[in-house]
Image 1 (cartoon, helix red, strand yellow):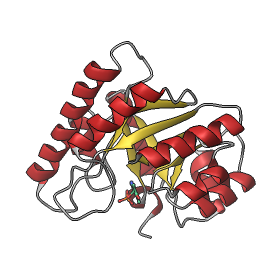
Image 2: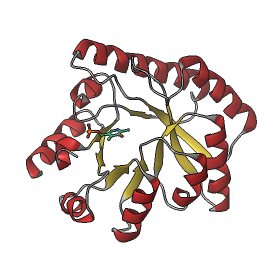
Image 3: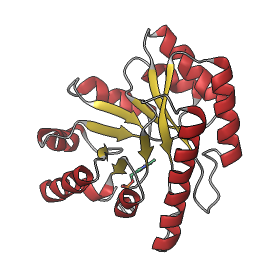
Length: 219
Ligand SMILES: *Cc1c(COP(=O)(O)O)cnc(C)c1O
């Protein structure tokens, strides 16, 4: 684990990017060994598991919710979550805003764009993303801070396809930044790249890679 962790730190550092260690299904002991090597950002995709680990582990960990989030579960994360990666609906945005207000804090989120060429229930199309942002600007959800975009490439060996999907995400990021966030320095995160495609993602402009199995072993 030490070797691949050092490699990942070096390569993300070279690109000025950051690493989310995806610890879903892994034990507190496994996560602590990475923590002891200096890693502080961990990502989970199930609310209950995330909450349980947060309760048991050191409080200087930054917890990221990287998976699909149901609106009735936002309340469990709202007191402490550092970044919610995969927001893809107005009802979810409104719920996050409401729970953030209740907790007297602002919650950082990313909007998920659907870039993969496969049937997936989650993520926004380009036009849905634009409409959502128009709605967001109109309604001023003041307890939410949109920090950028997130996406997942198709699960394939075709590197050029993956590259082209990441390019689409990066182009959309630039477009949305200019249209809606040109004076907002917080809109700066492009979350893309996993164990199998993080090198392509970094080359295409990722600022945050989400790596699980490469660090912790197969799930
Ligand atoms: C599981 C997961 C990852 C990490 O996947 P690996 O292939 O194990 O690196 C990244 N992003 C999301 C949204 C995930 O659910």
